[in-house]
Length: 208
Image (cartoon, rainbow, N blue to C red; front, top):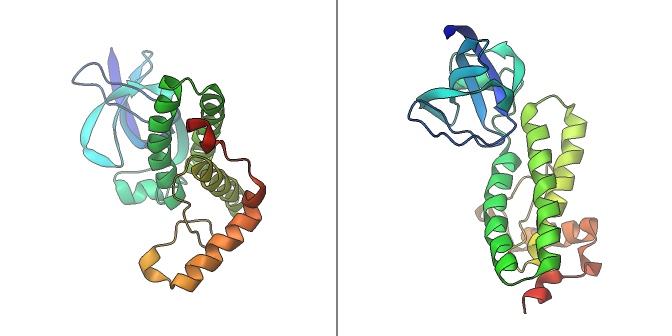
């Protein structure tokens, strides 16, 4: 196999990759990666994830969507067009982990309706998160997509009996220490109205 420089190209992982060898690099959907080398004809890159630049390994080329531009460190990775600092994308990753636990509980409890709804919702969130991280949409399109993501998170969290997250005008989570109780109430009320959550049929009762 022949390796050649990849000129520090950047991309976003579009599939999960579980490393099975010490020299391989595990990837999760949405990870921002920088490639330093590529194996000619073999379909492998060598590089690192922006979230942990000290860990270098190889991974399949087909698991990464390339972006134009070059990068030699974490800061320039953000300038390549990849949305590395999108708070909602990080939130979605946390939400998927929590919903994954709920999905397992629903599966064990034979709650078929819950399993189907969570599977559908999680699949959409993974796709939408990937679309945001690719950084190829116009800002107004990103905002509309963030509204859909936030609406789905709040709706499903309500249906599962989980916390509903207060959000600002950009649909990012609001830090409760930075706003008053009245502002928090108004934010909740507005988003419940926007998402149509008053009339939502809550399938949390399926757990009862």
